Image (cartoon, protein in one colour):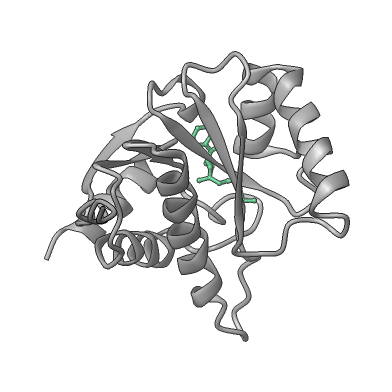
Length: 180
Ligand code: ADP
């Protein structure tokens, strides 16, 4: 017997909302983690606070089993979402912004690798924060263009990518980045 054909891949629908990613009902939410995977400030801290200790336990187990030296920048890995309404948290490590060194390929990789992880999970809806635009200092307009370009050029079985923007400036930047 022939094996079934691979499922069709296409580009996801992009939606933008202002809000708190920890409140999102999506199959997966993306965490702008740091490479330790052991929590931090910003959206990372909010996800661990709202999701409870199960997420940190899963991250510790991943460090012990696969990422003894931490999760490299641009890569992505999934854990339980603990008490959050989402099913999974996909942790990815954004690049720290540098004005003298073009790290945009790593910011693109955060988005494409998170989508690839979502595909392995069978996730159909995924919510992203504005990765690298907080503590890691990336200018919001530039980060928004990189994020939207990464999503619109990647074939995936994910149906909806929702960007959850924490303030007006981030929302406006993503809105402009989606307009031709
Ligand atoms: P990074 O270290 O990648 O810069 P941060 O968490 O500092 O990560 O910031 C990334 C973005 O997430 C910033 O735009 C910040 O305003 C936003 N943010 C912070 N908390 C939340 C939250 N609860 N939901 C969605 N976005 C958030």
